Length: 463
Image (cartoon, rainbow, N blue to C red; front, side, top):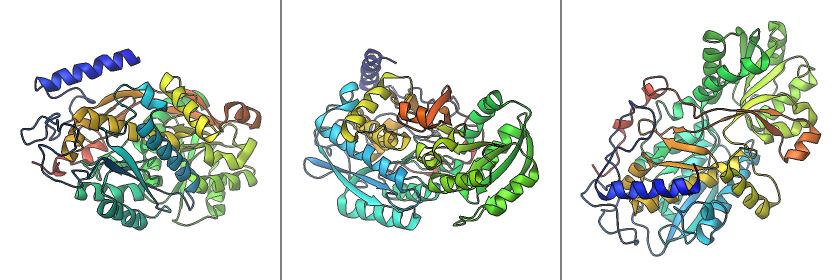
C-alpha cells in the first residue's frame, strides 16, 4: 500500500465514521465480538476537542491529566532475555522521540503529527521485568496507579505477557506486547484490552509446514527438544501438527527441558539415539543460544538440521559462523522488502549506529499503531480506542496488517530466515537472512486456538 493509498484509506474511514457506518473489514469472515465501531458506547462521536476528556466518563486512567500522556515500557532488560529486552527498550525510546518531535515512521505516516498524540507530549516510564511474571505485574500495577499510563508495550516471555494481559483487562488500560509466542495468548487467555502484534506457535507451525519441507526436503525425521512450559509446549504441538501429522515428515521423538534446566546433555543424547536428521528446538533467547552451543560442542550441528521456531539474531550471535544454516521464523527482518522498513532501519541506524532487529521494531511500531488509533478515535477513552483498534488496518514496516476483532490476533506477513556465516553477517549487519516471505498467514476463527478465545466475556467497560 502506498502512502497515497493510506491517505485515501484514512479519509474514507473518517467519512464512514462521520455517517455512522460500522463494521469495516478487519480479518477473516466469521470473527465476531462486541465492537460497535468508533463511537464511545454512550452516544458520543469520539471527538473531544483534543483535550482527552469531553463526552466520556472516567475509566481506567482516562482522562489523562494536563498536556502530557504517559506510555509505559515493561520489558526484560536484564536476565536471560535481557539482550532482546534491551532492543525493545531502544525501539520504545526511539518511538517516544519520534512521536514528540517527528522523524522515522512518524514523518512517513500521515496519521501521525510529530507533535505528541492529540497534542499531548508523550512521557516515558520504564521498568525491567527481568523475565518474571510477578515482577512484571508489580511493575505495571505501579505504572498504572502512580504514573497514570494510558498504554504500555514490551515483554518477551509468554508467561509474563499472559500475566500482563489480565492486568490490562482488569484495569482497562490497553496493552500491546512484544515477541511472546504461546498460542494461548490469542486463545484461552485472550483479552479485550490486549492486542497481539506478532505471530505465535500455531502460525509458526503453519508457516513451517509450508516452507520447511520445500527447503529441507520431504523425507525427514523430526525430533523435538522443547522448554516444558507454555511457549515450548505450544510450539512442539504446532510443529507436530503441521510437519508430521499433516505433513510429510516422520516423528522421531521428543525430550523436554525442565524450567531452569541449563544442561541439555540428556536431551542431546536422546536426540542422537533417535536417529533423527532434523531438530525442532523450541527454546529462545540465551537459553536457545546455550543449547545451540551445546549441540555444536557435541558435533551435531554439522549432522542435523536445526529449526528454532522463533529465532532472533541475538540467539545466533554467540555461535558465530556455526549459526550458518539454522532455520527459524521471524516476525520481521531488516531486509524486509517494503519502504517503511527501510525508513525505520535508517532512523534506527542514525540513532544507535547499528542495525535493528525484530525486538526493536515491535515496541516501536506498536506505539505508532496505538498513537494512530487514538488520533483516529479522537480520544484516549480506552473503550473507544479498543474499538478503533478492532477495525484498524495499516501498512508500515510490518507490511499490510490488521487486528481481528474476534481474538485481537494480528494478520501480517512473516519471514522464514536462516543463520548466516561471518562474512554475510558483516554485510547484512545482522545474523539472519530472509529465505521466504509468507503472505499474511492466519488460521480461521473457527479453528484452534481462536476457538478457545471467549472475547465476548471480556468487557469494554462502558457497556
